[in-house]
Image 1 (cartoon, one colour):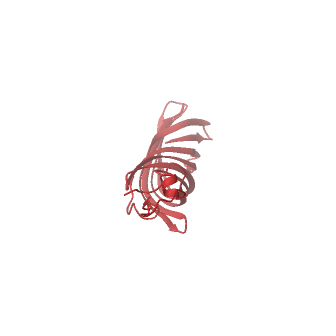
Image 2: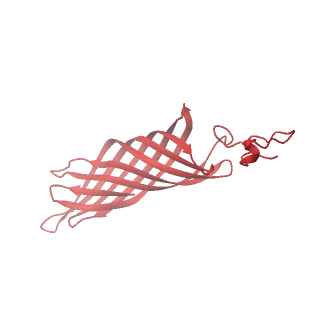
Image 3: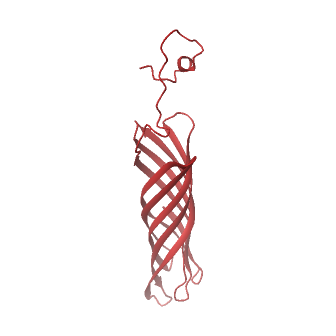
Length: 199
């Protein structure tokens, strides 16, 4: 996870980097073709400029709506999500003054921010899957403290996804139709395109 840090009073800039971990539940096609999801997570990023050392962390809950679809091959799924993040943010800021003294500031607050995410998942059998995700959030933190205005924006996360699907053969789980018995039908798409389970 990365983000851009800026503080206008001291004209400081830095790139923050760290980790973003989450436990997610997703109900596929919960409302028509729309997925609903809920996540619990935490992130921690840090970095330093000429005068500032910054640590930004948060415990959050994500509310998600999105769509899941398949193109080709059938064991690959794609997802597009729009989420809303509710978090409790914490910032530790060590500020070096012109005299060389270091002042430590601690800032906390409650945040509400939207984000977007694109993901790709590879199905392993009926239930297990692995995947990758890319997330974009416009703002991590923006609060004032002691005449300073620290902000962390343009946050990007690259996610490794490990998961388990409950009821893998339902709701698009991929059950193939059986080849019909009897006389051969050479126009039968099951035989022509090998799309069916021959058993």
